[in-house]
Image 1 (cartoon, rainbow, N blue to C red):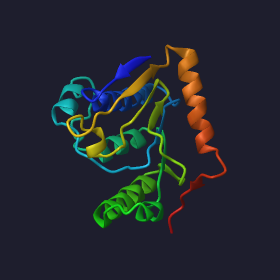
Image 2: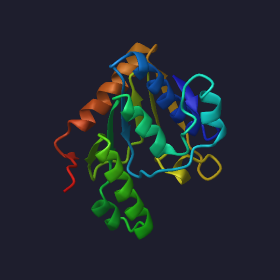
Image 3: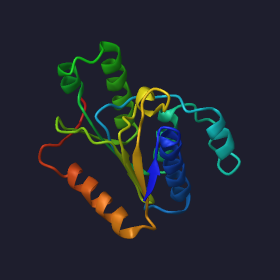
Image 4: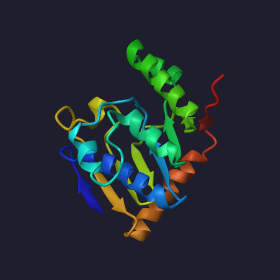
Length: 186
């Protein structure tokens, strides 16, 4: 286990997803599970894809949406658990945020991501075939920017088998919970 703080939370998230993309080039065992109540598209710092593109052809990544599309192009299974727009309306979030989230989730569904909703969700976790990251950051630009929030978390690489498997099983149980509804848009 490694401690992750506001200085490196977003880069750890990005690195986990790029690692999963790299694995998907040579393996079909790649997956990404994301649990977060608040979820939106956000810009990725331009220097990250340009550095990574020294190794991979990912220079066209401008935002989180582009990264997810790249993963899906390599048939990486992606599951997302979040609050629905109706649940967020009850929490009095802005109409702009709710509309942007709906549009983003429709895009994700259209490219083959599985989208789930639960009113019980306040957890923030990312699980891939290589690592688990859990902490306090929502998947939004304000949630992931260290200068706006003091995000803390813990990173468990798969090499720490027992911890990784415990966290992975916990997340799998959440996706199979009877209070979770899979979204099938009209």
